[in-house]
Image (tube, rainbow, N blue to C red; front, side, top):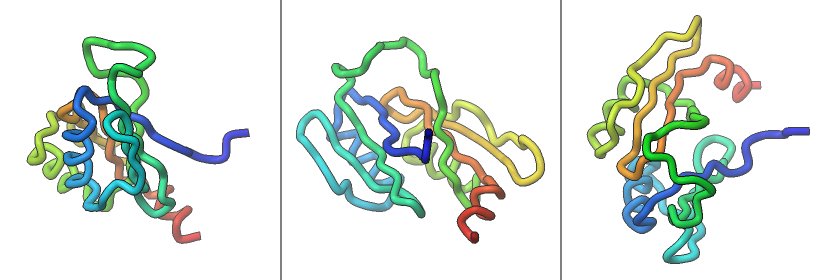
Length: 129
């Protein structure tokens, strides 16, 4: 039934500012936009869609970051966490060993969304296959 992640969506009060921040994080330009309410990037080995939507359209408005955390594979988790914090994110969860070949960390981006990073050996094994 489920074949893979189609689009990861985050929300921001200022979509243009979030677009610029994530442009720096991803190192690429957005490929699609409907100003001023939506912008989308294609990210990573499988070109997953990452969308930013005006927070006014969010189905709920929690006061603290939470909910599901999407983890993006990174080759160097400590460097990734450091870069995200340098760009203005705040640490949500420190680098944490989860088991052999699985290490996670997460941040809260400047717009109140939780962004996870993970070193995941299974991801690398699947990519190599």
